Length: 349
Image (cartoon, rainbow, N blue to C red; front, side, top):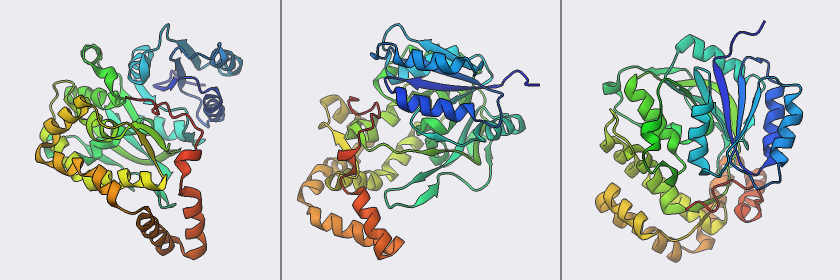
């Protein structure tokens, strides 16, 4: 007997019928069937291909629910729609291009019943740019119940990865929808801060629930990597210390520089120079560190590509040995230019 589900798997869909069908199949094979699978199609210009595909699976999956927005709301708009449409206590937001494990629902349901978090980030596996399969989170569950003892906001910033996030639907998010929330793709951070300000019960859960299939093509580097996370934090009033979020972002700047330089190797690809508005936000958020950020393009311009390739290859050989290191190097160099996957963020501005 299946009890009333406490979990909705909420998938924002747009024009990617193949990846969506793959993940629906993964949920069809889940060991625990006690969940609702909610798909919100953001007015895909696909002549009804997604709706037709989903309707075929609904015949064997009574827990599958399809919704289509009358007009395109954008990524964050669709996330908010999924939150509003969900009817269960908890919502697992999930991008359709990740790979879900067969026992993911079982792991999530058991963890939610045991801990009753307001916001939880689950573990996942991924392949880092050095070809190493890694676990993204802690080795054991960690509970945070006192907001004043959370001195380091690194755990909270794990909510940047949508597919690892589960939230309790305990409040209306109209407060967020009254802001300019559609201007970035990190509205889940704003939702998390809103909910945790009402009741602070935050968990990092060690159980891995998926494999993250990292995309290689994105939009404006400065906006996407350096500005929008902080814009999502500053979007509403909450009970957290905004200065600690800025401190975390400043600490991450050396990593951001490496990411920026990786474009010369084709490992990742970004578009556009920063707009005037983005530069204003960089000045507002980063203060004197804006000069370090402004140096990124000059460091990239004057650093020889051959030097970066040599450093990268040497690091790979030290990690994997000569043969495997060369193979990882061959697979990763210029991968962004051969990646045909549509992340949805390529034209993001």
